[in-house]
Amino acid sequence: MRKRNKRQLFEKLEVVDAGAKGKSVAKAPDGRVVFLTNAIPGDVVDVQTFKKRKNYFEGKAVHFHSYSDRRTEPVCEHFGSCGGCKWQHMAYDSQLFFKQKEVVQHLERIGGVDLPETPPILGSEKQYYYRNKMEFSFSNKRWLSQEELESDLEITDKNALGFHIPSMWDKILDIKKCHLQPDPSNDIRNGLRDFAHTNGLTFYDPREHTGLLRTLMIRTATTGELMVLVQFGEIDPDGHNQVMTYLQETFPAISSLLYVINTKQNDTIYDQDVRVFAGRDHIFEEMEGLKFKITAKSFYQTNPEQAYELYKVARDFADLKGDELVYDLYTGTGTIAQFVAQKAKKVIGIEAVPEAIADAKVNAENNQIHNTEFFVGDMKKVFTQEFLDTHGIPDVIITDPPRDGMHKDVVAQILKIAPQKVVYVSCNSATQARDLALMDHIYQVSKLQTVDMFPQTHHVENVVLLEKRENPKIEP
Image 1: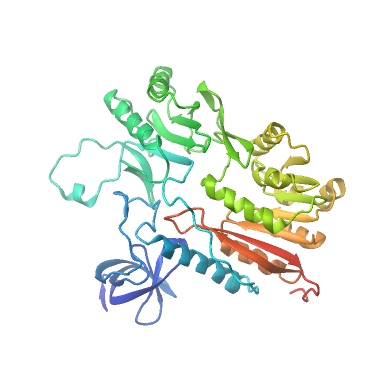
Image 2: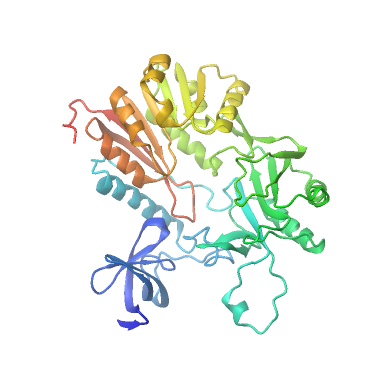
């Protein structure tokens, strides 16, 4: 170990674990944790630190003495620069191992809950080309590699269509091929970029907020339908028509061809008017005979085949007999609500996004499901005693909150009414564990199932069945 400009070099550290946010973990000679972004468990490396805190370091492996047998060769040429698939260099069975390990550790250490026997994680049949939605950004200041910066060649093409470089909001990595979304995603992106170059169309400047082409969203569906949305950063009817006509004529398989004119400083389209250039304003996804209308602003699980497995777990955990009133909290477009409706007396869905609830109602009508009701509003404000007095006390609650977990007032309301079962679907086991700790005096975890929705990343879903204790603990 030696100091260098307040940084430190640790030699021959063994990487021992995979930590939060996809980082790997080693131990410094003084016992402090070292978080790494470019190594995996089993590697033996020299580490150059770039951040020091009281209890940990952050660093990068600068020399590999030996490589882990958990390694595999990344398939993507952009791996290491693109932040989208941080675990692509780790064999898939090892990815599953560390995902499940993290979930169990969170529930036991953060939640402090007793767990039943843990079944194996459900892996994804598709490890690539599983995403049904991708969003790409245009930029006139693309990220330049170290080789390009050090070369003597004059760099004339600085346009890019791709992904943000991690921690660099204004730098876009130009993507040649992405392995996450099935074709024709790559053809559409590359074709549009080439068309823009040929015709001198301007790419967006994220600092100056100028430029015609701003973002590109592509949605695919298991039904074969395809949605493409172009976000323009300037008002230029001729330019808009030129781009959209190219897409319509070159890719006739597009079912929904849309555009947005967004001159504000952020890219979100949720407060923007989405315009139809050709086709419908939506596409359809299908699951177990149910059809779901997907608009540009809709939320739908990005791995549809694995979402089916996830929802089957949630339905099995609920174990409905046909006479239950079910509340589906954070219902989104009502996918889970409709998925379980045939086994329930009635399902009530609550969601904060108005467009999602509008989609949920349309989907239920199209699917001829008549025992669901959907309500829009902030969960902590809607899920009140007055709401319960009007619509009934649920026998079962299914909750699928965002990454932040449930608001403490929502947890308190669940504990107050204390239904016999709560099925908790989570995309963040740390916040799920926090919520379980608040509920542990009344509920016990009787089942859990971890489901991998996002191969090549550290993200994972977890489903827990909570059942009321026969003898509640003394409230903490």
